[in-house]
Image (cartoon, rainbow over all chains, first blue to last red):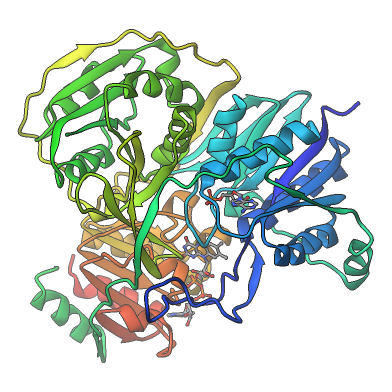
Length: 252
Length: 315
Ligand SMILES: Cc1cc2nc3c(=O)[nH]c(=O)nc-3n(C[C@H](O)[C@H](O)[C@H](O)COP(=O)(O)OP(=O)(O)OC[C@H]3O[C@@H](n4cnc5c(N)ncnc54)[C@H](O)[C@@H]3O)c2cc1C
Ligand SMILES: Nc1ncnc2c1ncn2[C@@H]1O[C@H](COP(=O)(O)O)[C@@H](O)[C@H]1O
């Protein structure tokens, strides 16, 4: 018996990291029409880690889950192609606040009797960096956030965490929530046969109602605006001119 | 009126400047209290520093052996216990605050605001998202606590001119044993200024080419009395430690002078330096996006320009 039967990996569909998004001219939101969408990069890292854990024989099964609209099945199929065993779409028509996302993930954890959730530290659209910590709190379980190394020994996980001072090592009892940082691993590329295979893997759709989650909106959005622009600078021709410019600004 | 509780970040001896920046944020709206909670093994020294911050009305010292090292799962129930007296609970948007505050919020059954960059009154805040490509204005409801992290690059630290009373609080909450601190490993610093508070920062990117070459960045930094930073590519390639990464998913900084060497200026990097006073870019590629935000750009090979610059700055 392995210590972990099911690893839950939440995937968020987000605007691709290489796209430079802008605020719509009328300030009603971001201009996202026709923009490339991807799995949140930190979630890809989470899935890669889960795959490696399963490949080491330390877990039985990997379930990927998304809370979002029907189009998010693209990202779930992407997760299945990477190697997840099955997928769950919690179909919701609008963006939910992290607390509701965490409540929904808790319902999935309980439904799937999962011992480990690995997820991104941050979704690169909302930049909240909250959901994993909230899930761990609601679940009453440990959190190992910003992980850059992860090992298991029976029912205990040892995580190295990227913190402001450098690296920190903590030990947590399972079940637990792990959130990923950039250096945890490098996600694999999916091959064409895997994409074809993924089409046959189970993908289930559920609603918040079925999970008994009441969506809650706490924060009222009053406006979205572009950030202040920095004034255009100058180019200098050589190091002497650079030094002069710095002296002029009394920086050296 | 708003009553703000700020969770102190510290290492057992000194208060992290992020805490004083949270105080500055709270001072921008009307409050009847700005208190600081110090959770520590022995919080004597830290509590005294917290009590000295201008604008602080009180310090709550929570000494407990379990608070010897900062663990979110251990601290969160203690903060929740204190939170009932407050309308707001703030922490810095450092890895400490990001780890802890969402856990506090969820235990209180409320949402959390990340990276407050300005407050327009006690219940209306601005925060960046989409890698700083957009600024959101949100209103929090007044019938429940506002739990938030404060974007440290947006505030100056409150001065140390005050003398608030310190009271002790005994822990009632049950503390979990499922999370255990093992060790901290950090090799950076070497007597250099702290990246998050330094007046001057020199950062190196992939263009620097190797860990050995990164010495050049350290030498220039030492000449300028600067802290050292790095791009993600430089950290991923092992040229620099993860604690030096500047950007959307690393550290957001606001030095007076930022010198970027061999960094292209991806949006994820730029969002970390937007608030810098003067940005200098040294790069061989005149089209590098960093030049779009740089106040002073030098198109040059760093291996020629940086040694020359070190020389020009004198012995
Ligand atoms: C989810 C996610 C999060 C991210 N978070 C961050 C983050 O927090 N911070 C961050 O920095 N990045 C982050 N990135 C990565 C970011 O997108 C870029 O890949 C990264 O910033 C590039 O680093 P770089 O500029 O050092 O490397 P490159 O883009 O490769 O640029 C190297 C530059 O060096 C110049 N150069 C080469 N040789 C020389 C020479 N001899 N002299 C002078 N110049 C030279 C080149 O012209 C080039 O412009 C993130 C990416 C993702 C997907
Ligand atoms: N709608 C969602 N569906 C699935 N997972 C999500 C969703 N929103 C957030 N997450 C997960 O929570 C992580 C942190 O997101 P955030 O707290 O919003 O920055 C992400 O990396 C995802 O793993």
